[in-house]
Length: 73
Ligand SMILES: [Zn+2]
Image (tube, rainbow, N blue to C red):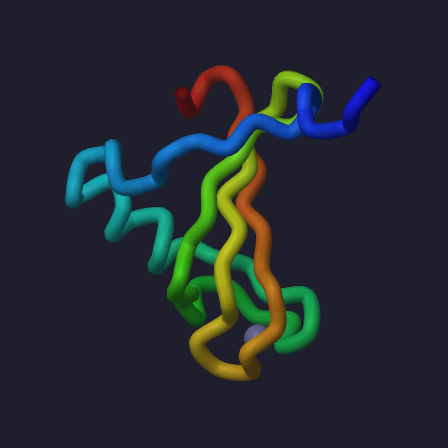
């Protein structure tokens, strides 16, 4: 049994350009405690039925996560 089955990689670049831009701008950074600082090098994956977009905070370089709920899909 492998954990990989639960963690499915998705392709962020398949999203609309405008949608990608929105995800990259609308962020929340736990370290900066500030919203919409922006992130880069996004990675999208699905874990236990929830989709996450993970990137790097443009300000401090920490990992930031965006969790997508069903109504945003
Ligand atoms: Zn930050």
